Image (cartoon, rainbow, N blue to C red; front, side):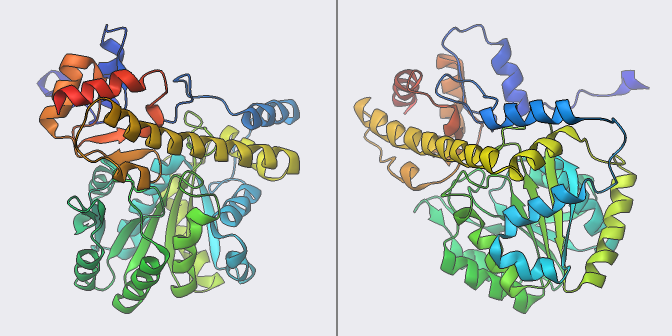
Length: 397
């Protein structure tokens, strides 16, 4: 039967990495896949993570399964990181529970299956553009997807009025997928006032927000990046939150994430989580322990937590430094086009404005790998590769 199958197309992003690995050019640059790189072009093991992992292994006494939704302490620490002090009332009322999932992608798939199982034939609305894997995840769960305007390419900003108008027309009971910060792929985020307006629209229209929070700490800070989510929690009774520890802890290969369910009451959340457990049980049964144990060890130790928070700041500052250097280096390379907007964007990604043809030329002529949409992983830039990168962009422009 397998001989009759046609080859499935390569993943738009991960497939790019495979092509990059096969490229023989000694000067090749990969700005496609969303992985943080340090000044040496490596994805580092954070010192706090290395220390925590050593402690976890030294103290480990069993390889027994975790509960279906994972360790309770991990869940509590996740909610505290996401919701902070404003979440204390939610926590004390028992209005939130967390399931430890295999990465943020796992959290999204569990959320998708939960939505299909419990809410029926609702639609999910996602930003235009959004992360390339978002539509695939919800399509696989059998959920119809629609988009709302988000990125204003001409003004390099959020198309907020158009976004609001579209969501005001969304049928009651539908789900709206939102990026908490560091919007992927545009790097353009909502401001505080826009979050407040959005919260009111969601409340009035009876829409359920599903917040993808993959980059906490990579925008303006751990607390600052959570402002939008916390505004939603102040206004709405029900929220689904998919968070990831891949970026801010560097736990990419540990696949450590979480789905947090916020409801109107302890009883309502208990009912919801009973269905989340059924979804998890029929999918991967229970989560991998190691990454969650590392996160728990760091967040419960004052010394390790202070070290980790400093490391997050250093990663964020390096990314923002690369944004500034990129803009300056493009000017130095003779590029007349204004790229100053890149300094105002946040997170690992930038919507560069490069066309598909220019992206193709960069790959063919200069061994520089960028997603076809023109999304650039700023975290893949270094002081060493910046001159060649900007000279190549100047050439294709």
